Image (tube, rainbow, N blue to C red; front, side, top):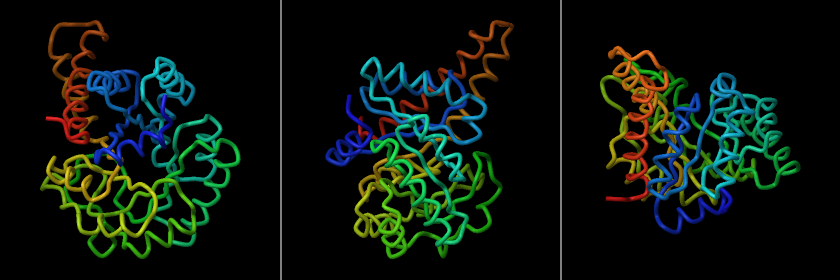
Length: 283
C-alpha cells in the first residue's frame, strides 16, 4: 500500500485532492471508509484532541490499522493538536500525520512549537507527515451566527509569511488561512481566496491543506484544488448529517441502537460520497 506521502504525490499528478473527514466514533469511521472504498479513492480519517479523547487513541489506531491490513488506502491524522506534548503522543502512536496547530500564537512561538514536533517525528518515525498551520480560521465545529472574531481578509496568510514559516519549520504539509473558517456561518460562508491559494502554492514547496471546507460550494472547492490544494477537510457537515440521520431513526418506534443509528451512518456516507466525488473530479 502507498504511504500517505505517495498518495498525496498521486493526487498532485492527477490534479485532485484527498478527502479528510473527522470522526468521533466507529459509526462515522465506517461511513467514511465505506464511501471511499466504493469509489476506489484514498481517504484520511481525522481525529482532533477531543475526538481522540472521546473515541480513544488505541481504538481509532486499531480501526485504521485493520483497514490498512486489507490494503485499503485509509490514513490516520491527528487533527488540530494544540500542544507539543499531545503531538508527541500522536507520533508515539504512529499516526500517519499530525497537525501541530499554533495558529493563534505569535509567529515565532508557532514556528518554535512546530519545529519541535517536526524534529521529534522525524527522529522517531520518519514516515510521519507533520503539518503546520498559519493564520487563524476560528475553532470548533458549530453553526455560527457570524464569522469568528479575528478572522478577516487582513488576517489571511500571505505568500511571504507562508514561505518563511515552511522554510523555518521544515513541515511536510501546510495549512493557510485563505477565506476558510471552521464551522458553518448561518448567513453564508466567506468566499475562498483562490488568488491567494495560487500565490501560496507558488511560494512554498510542500502540499497545501484546506481546513474548514464545510459550507463552501463545490465550485469553490474545485477551484481551490485547481489552485493547489491537495487535502480538503470536512467536519461540521458530516456531524450535521449524522445528527439528521439519528433524529430520523429515533423518530420511529425502533429501540435497537444498531437500527436507529444506521440512519445516521447512511446520511454520513451520502455526504462523504458527494464530497469525495468533488475532490476527485468524478461525475
